[in-house]
Length: 611
Image (cartoon, rainbow, N blue to C red):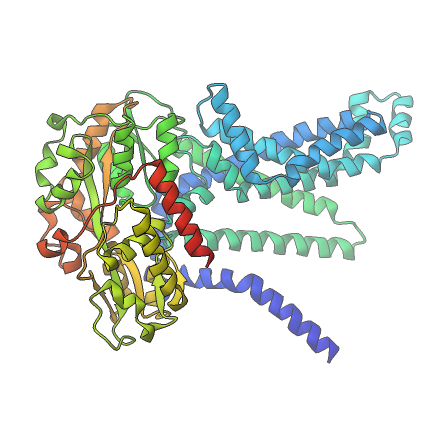
């Protein structure tokens, strides 16, 4: 019975660890995009992954940064251990204490500190700054792995080698190095693993166009992680699993021969390093590392917000070399543009952020002589543009949409046509609300008949009380994952933006969407040019390119978000992507409310989430 209990306990642990990985591997062979519906076996995501230059470049950056950071940290760490070994016990303990601080410190503190140091000394963030940061946080791991091996050394052996006529260098390589080699290999592999796995420090120290796998995945949160990254994760897991099998087989054979197996494991480690070096060489050969010049265009955009193949088409058409960098939220993008820590030529930002950047005089005025395709912009978006960029002098709409209620036809018992339906106790525990301050208060404001941009504290208090009264009915608070909850039929109602409608209906025919009769929020994501632009002509060429009818069609098929382009309106059959004038008259665009109002909203939102 005890043995059965142990096996059951072990089985549960393995299930907990490997079931998510197994699910990811299965989904990588799914022909559809959704994680909640199987649409047939396919290798399409593996094909797309291998043909996706962004993913391949991110993979190359991840491996080469990890490789060089590990090599340099290992060399410097071993030299440091040599010096520490020669110190007195008191000094050595003090230095080792300092070495351990980064191991205990939060990654975000290290990342921000290193970034501030670079900015303080006027060093532009780039591939080199990421590499330096990785060397810095890998070094303590090497010292921690190698130093115990020095303590185990018999100094008499080293001195005997010197007495027999060996030079200090020869004695080190023949006597000391073999003894400390296990620690060196462990330190190197630990550094490599930590570097590959890092996100936070890379996020704060990377420059334009520098993405690793972790930052690329993070940047895709706005529109959902694409299955091409499931395919890549599956390949990485399979490679690691294969290497572990080889190591264990070789170790087992060595033990049978009476050997420690260390030499075989070391051979596998060296082989792995060579493979990584080859991958890195391929990356630099085929992708290179961008260097700023007048022929380049630097784009800063939400992750996975346009078809990657369009970049190549733009380059072929215009001759400009494009470097695209990604962010997840407007708030992440704002300090980069404000502080000019990385120089970009064109950015994509939402309506309220465009207004904020304009208020701080951070955007350049557009030259419409270079943007003739501006005539393709639909008329229904222009009144909303006037609300934050009068005359469209600084921004051009790229995508737009509304917020509404997605419902499952088989799970509702009443007509859904109002925000008040989210307070219906019939759907207790079946409602998904947005995990977003402004969208949450937008729902309450429209329900009470207030403006979504109100700054009245009394009205904000009333909206908070209304949201608190609805909170017991909520199944989950989610933004991008709301569509997956609806596709998987985990909820009956969810607040989503209209850009998710086509994707969700393709995955589940039982889903519907309605814009409530009280009106809603109209959101607009725009192209704009920072005042610090280095290549304004190229930036305007980029904006003009995305206003082209053919390009808009390609991007609509890829993204399924509404694009306000006259040339493709006949393709947008879904009514919610083209709201009627009556709906738009009742709707508003979010405005930048200022620091004082933002602080007040944040205070009440925290009060709401705490209850």
